[in-house]
Structure formats: C-alpha cells, structure tokens
Image (cartoon, rainbow, N blue to C red):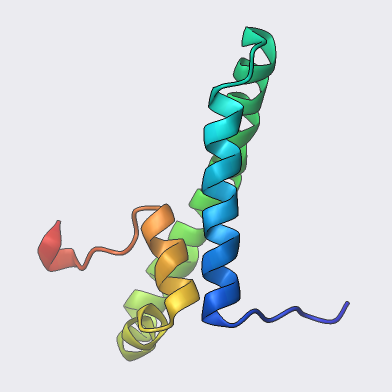
Length: 92
C-alpha cells in the first residue's frame, strides 16, 4: 500500500474536519448513538495512545535528538498534542 502524504495545510484541514465531526456527534439527537460514538472515539484513542506512548518512550530514551526533531514536524507535533505528549519533561 502506497503511503499518503499531506502537506501541512491539507493536514490542518483534516484536523479541522475531525473536530467538526466530533462536535456534530456530540449533538446527535439519539442518546444511544451519541454514547456509541463516544465509546468508539474513546477506544480509538486508547488503541493509539498506548503504542504511541511506548514508541515515544523508546525514542526519548535511545534517541533524544530524534525526539526533538520529530516534535518539530507540524503533523507529528499535532498528533502529540492530540494525545497530550507534546510537553517536555520540564513542563510536567
């Protein structure tokens, strides 16, 4: 499968659209559908958060310069913000 690469503007549009969809999901008329959607998003978050945390831990322990370089990329920085991994240890 060929990877897809978006430029920063396209990626920002994707983030904006996801935020809009989540907001719309919060306002769905059916409580059951809202609850189901919230559960899907919650478990999708957990599915990605744990391995991302482990990847970052390995990188920060073994390749601290790489961790800093990765955080300078807009899309990676945005992902780290979404999962609350954007803070430096000094910030925590």
